[in-house]
Image 1 (cartoon, one colour):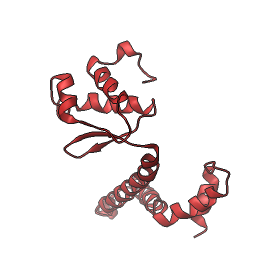
Image 2 (cartoon, rainbow, N blue to C red):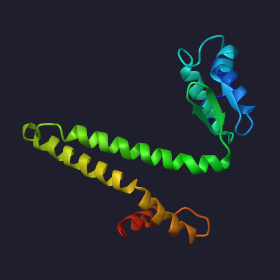
Image 3 (cartoon, rainbow, N blue to C red):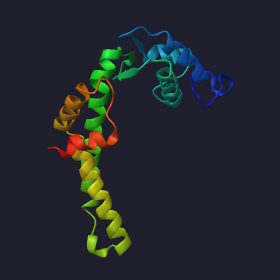
Image 4 (cartoon, helix red, strand yellow):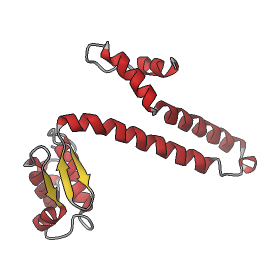
Length: 166
């Protein structure tokens, strides 16, 4: 349940959607039409924020969902959550880093103040590092290190060492 708000503070619409999500079985899809009928209005439009809040609340109860394009919301199995969540987010982060770096390189650098030049270069450096760190080969290297770490995630310093040992 949402740790920031009590049940009474959560909107009635969010609560109704959340209650429906709690009933989802693994791999079950609840359609947008069904969710919209629950609220009496389209969850893809005016009630999108309610659905987003309900999905976030459900995560706290161990119910991870994903959108099925133009269909509805599907409850993921634990296995599917592990298989796709990290990979999907890493790839999204990598693409976002590339897009942002591309935008930054479009500025007229010589026209920037010294302070903005410093910010520009720092941001480009960090975006480049994030993009490199998000590569599949780095994940494989980290995974091999975790495999010998008794089922525990690595500390940040150890994770960075995996990246350096290219």
